[in-house]
Image (tube, rainbow, N blue to C red; front, top):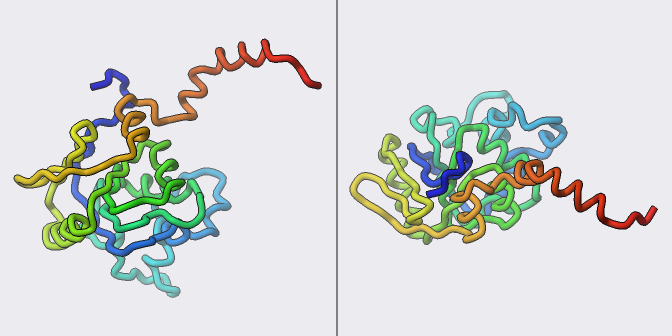
Length: 201
């Protein structure tokens, strides 16, 4: 286990089920929110157009359901996060309170954006995902533990295997997932290389 305080080895908590495949980033956070100068406040806008009717009343979307309030793990479907590459989508999910996502598969750019803000993405087969959806729908209080080192998800007396992108898993376990932070920590070395490079001006 890494001594790096930024290392992410386990995620624990209840889950929120979100059945359906090919849920794209425009559904996760509508395009009009891309005008935001910062990501602050995006958590309340996640799935905005699906969670609210035109008159402002709430729909029966899982993110509105009180029984899933406080959930730390999202259980999605196949090809979650497809569509545009907007960073706002994982930011909105994270700011809603989600710390990890389990799904059948994820869009590549969305996956990279999740890793860069410390959200582990775990994959398993379609039947297992369907079973997890049913489990959480019937018992929203069930607690899960995602172990990135063992590549497992445990709940009650059961443990299932998961898969992860190897590079993402390594970065999360080592605490090197924040690429911007890594860049800033090496600012002096970068400046030294810049001084040694020939000028083309």
